[in-house]
Amino acid sequence: MAPCSNGNIALMADLARRNSIRWDAILGSDIARDYKPKPGVYLAAAEAFNLKPNDCMMVAAHSPDLGSAAAVGLHTAHVARLNESGPNTGESGPKVPVDYSAKSMLDLADKLGA
Image 1 (cartoon, helix red, strand yellow):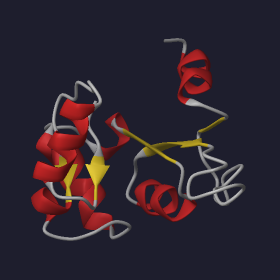
Image 2 (cartoon, helix red, strand yellow; image 1 turned 180 degrees about the vertical axis):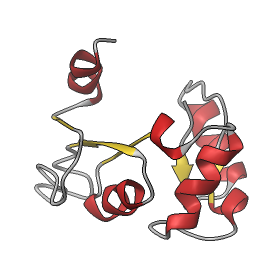
Image 3 (cartoon, one colour; image 1 turned 90 degrees about the horizontal axis):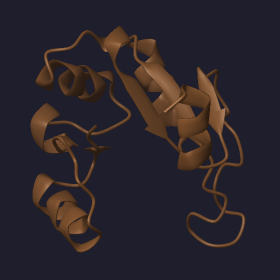
């Protein structure tokens, strides 16, 4: 499991350390040399783990990210973050077709049988 972030690796590592998040890797703009939602970012993330896109899942709260990830073959899951940048500023549900739609990460885990 790894974040695919537009933030750089140092920033994401610092956030993980401060919040006790244990990632297998940190991927995104530094690895792909580009930014989401460009397709190459998702392909570079899959390639970093030596996986085919259809062996990966992009989990996000932003429909444009999920649409781009799906377009290159990744499975997708939308997790709602209703108050992402203040009251009712986030997406309550996906605006693009996704494989899973969840109200929280725990809800997604239940839907995945984890």
